[in-house]
Length: 209
Image 1: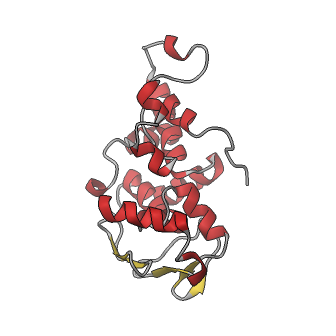
Image 2 (image 1 turned 90 degrees about the vertical axis):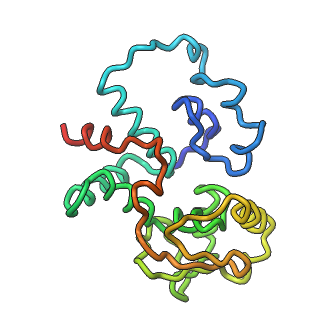
């Protein structure tokens, strides 16, 4: 699968807001968007202020894809599944993405970023209901129990992430035991528990054309 290998901070600057793609760096004064709050490139400071409705919809889709580290084909597939489900399509979309294994590991505070969580999963360091799970896109069922393998529990980066999560807090819809590096995916998040800056209705409008 294709991966974005360039500087992730450029993505935040392109969207004009923090997407929290670099873990602890995003919470420090080293975050580039604090010093250069404009799009990257030689014309970054001279962008047109007028954006069309389509432009707003496209930017919102790109922003959410970048937050969760998804490619277009994956994202469109999630949207199609969300559209077929009962309920509000936009919320269904966010809940489906939040249920991904790599995202659940990140939300539990066992990784400082979703990229780091994906790496932990791919290295066979996560157990889902007692069995090793190494596919980041696995949809975690409600009530599932996750834990890190013994080999990962003493990793410096895991410990740093857990310490940071202990001070900032973990997702409200999960039961997490940070000292033992495990937790339970208790329920799907409600809309008010997710990022208020995401305007999922714009994405629905974009794909509904």
